[in-house]
Image (cartoon, helix red, strand yellow):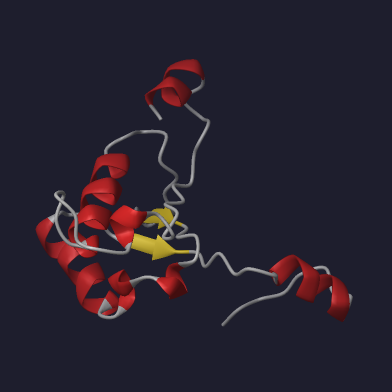
Length: 113
């Protein structure tokens, strides 16, 4: 992330932690899955190359978020991130099969509301 900022300050990266990773599935020496995700997102949010919306929220895209225990209390986790870590997050879902669905429906854009 720092290399991106060093090479081109305008280049932005959207973090995409893979929620299939063991650290996000079960308790480890690093703590609970929620603590692991908190650590990762907090660390990535400090880089200037982390993509943010105009309102300052960090854009984050969790791969396979539906499979993890981190989101069995997702709204409270988001509130904690904002109040304790001072990181506001805008999630963009990574939905498996979305491209195939878009092709099947023959649409250019498919919005998830």
